[in-house]
Image (cartoon, rainbow, N blue to C red; front, side):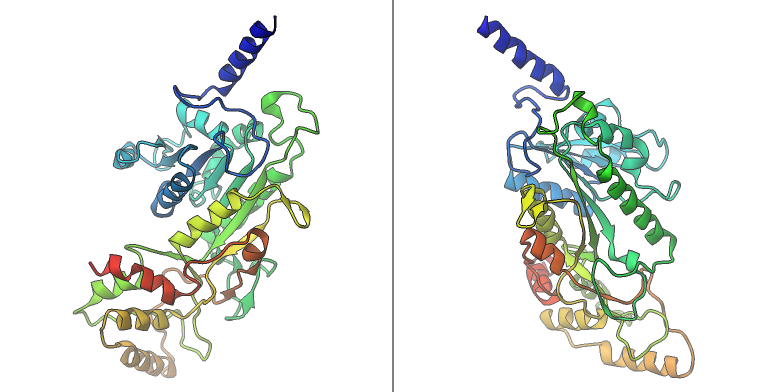
Length: 375
């Protein structure tokens, strides 16, 4: 009778969910890529400085949704005991190289949304999630959206000119080249015709929705504990300047593309919560520059941090020394993150998803951080 059929159907859903836990809703096939329903779930590769803040932002916005993620060791896992809503799994990228255990893999393949923050592995020069679990993602019937965190370093040097997502990739360093490859692998995965179909066997074309995979090229990330205000406070009483130069001094300023960590969270939440359809038709994955509006030189940011802290500027003397060194043909100290000089535009992300910056420039960002950093 109908009652028995209904009970068997519910049992089938529960069995298919695999990783559903007591008290949680069954894991149904989502009907949209939007992270908005109780059936949505998020898996974050890398619960580090940025990843844990992303998790907290999604949980605050959607407390009913399941969130899980990875750390690199059991020791790191214990640090998240105060996040009872977060399922933490170990993805050992230092010793074992075995990928996720069965519980972590269950959360990955049942996720509707995946955000990958971990840089490509040096031993593989590949994205670690794809290196270990590409086939698992390929078979996932629930996957609807992926946000891959890349870097503006892939552009290399453009002589300080303004560039956008279609500009030439001129990077030459190994880390940035590995980022390029990881972007290409994620984009290739999105183009596979059967992506997401294998998990449920045959799926009618009317019911099938291809997952969307976006790549976000982040500028330098700053936030609590990682800002110019932090640097200035640490360097008080020392003769070291808060500015640094890269290579020879020249008439072209060394621009730094940056982004406040809170704005990374808002961008990902906005993208993940967007519907499949846009004003131009069905959305497909794109590349976005995730930066603020003002790629200012480091010395300008340092001067503003010192002003906010009520300290005198120490920049003029240091720049005079650097200019004399350049005039004498000597190289000044290079930065450890010198991936070329460019100014990245962010209009595509604003236009596509309606994203708004809470800190359009470093000035607003430093003001937001002032109370936290100066305590």
